[in-house]
Length: 311
Image (cartoon, rainbow, N blue to C red; front, side):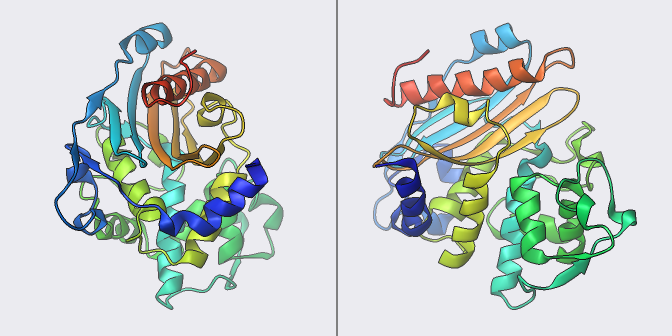
């Protein structure tokens, strides 16, 4: 199956994917309605050792992965907190899509873009100052290009950080912190604007893989298309998968070291593998070296799950 064919099958066939089993950890991180009917299939959580990778890179890595075909769940520092940076933009788009489904928002509603909205990294909104962008265009710019003003505008239109926090609670996430807007939210300050990799794994399953997702098929198709088409993070999850795989993902980066990537990996003709990777590197580490840590962790995890050989 080619990449383009696989992309189409991803967009149309996600509803057929289910949680085949829940690990001991995932049983607490995946909402009850996502679990299969009948006796629960409990697969013990498997610790994957990334200590050598951390020592080589000089940072702290949080990682969680689940192979949805058999429920195998790998984890390293998965219950520790990490600044999520722009990975939250995938969840922000999902929250906006839920409002559209409820009739509280419209894809085609035009929002004025002003110079007062502008902050660093505005590839979609910058050229639109003085005109308008639709809610759909703002979501696309937020997810595909990680546009910061677009994210702040969507949070504002959603109802502020309290509304975004309520979205997380509504999908069963009772631990992720939502405290600030872009760009302040990227700055490390205790537990502010942090997430646990295990919790992020559960959120991704809830929204993109579980048959019990609150997203309709059209909403999920839009979000998946943006996650697949994003050009960001070519050296992270995408660099860690074998040729021919499809990666639907959202990156997040902080200027002082945080390097993150989360999403769903699809082997040709195979089931989904959900991954949440959060790496807090040292400020002295290069962006390429930080990306390489995510890629190597992905390769090692896939090898442990029986998908290719570790590099």
